[in-house]
Length: 110
Length: 119
Image (cartoon, helix red, strand yellow):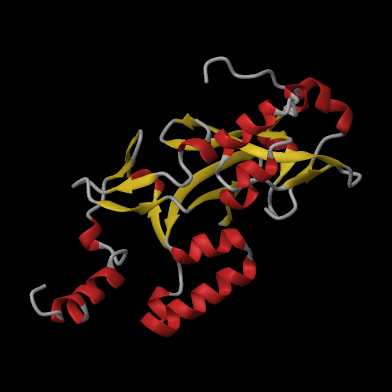
């Protein structure tokens, strides 16, 4: 059984297939699948440092204060489009041209 | 559910509502052609040290083995299927007294605190 520690992905830089920086893993979304909880998507954006220090609420407030938050830079990448076998170096498994279809809007429910 | 926001660093309690520690790690199983599946959470200083880097994790593991023996060289893991409730705290259907999570605490109580006059 191959296992990974998901906390090691927090704040990690995501590279494209060509080695270009896509962003940083801000959040990992999971959903119930029968008796299991499975990872469904990775949120990749600009907050890496704040997320990693578990100060995301403070970090978001600071970014908003200086108008540095770019919500259009958030991507919701499905689980099968990101290779996390090496948590230190997550890599995109699809071309960057597909990212435009993964742009996420702020989740109003949250 | 957002794993980093709703699970990581959250308080863990057992079935008696005893505070066990915080969720320091989330273990997922990678399956070919299927989404990663959460199989366990990890608690303890070794997992926490590993979040700072591989080297701090190794140092902490070595220190734990030196002080407590080989059985303390790995992080404490609780199977995900034992989760009972996810809210402000994460409740697991276990009894902490049946695990080794409080081994250090018990040792300190028996060998240090218990010997202090009046304790």
